[in-house]
Image (cartoon, rainbow, N blue to C red; front, top):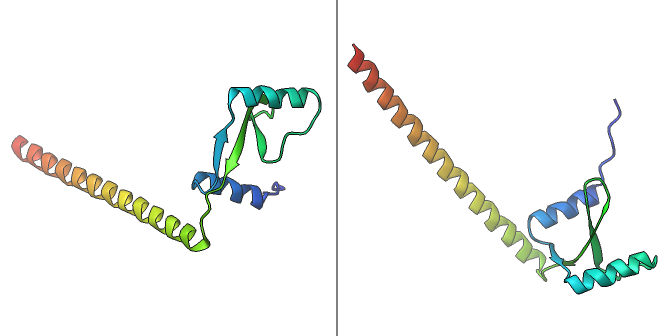
Length: 117
């Protein structure tokens, strides 16, 4: 069974969007009209302007630009590290919550079994 090739650059770009290191900025209605007119006239879009596409590949008629915050490599690493720390803290809180819930349910079960005897 053959596997499809994965475009790693596109995957990396997607991850940059997920981490907010790249951000999509929607164009105004007037700009959308102007860009739709360009496409109707078979003219190219200006540099840095992209069209949203449906999963089927159909045009949506809405456009966006990409904003890239001006961060140094060190600032990017610091941002990612702090984001990881926040996620680890959230995981820790979830583990504590579910552990406490389990212990409480075990104690209630124990007392329920003892009262039936």
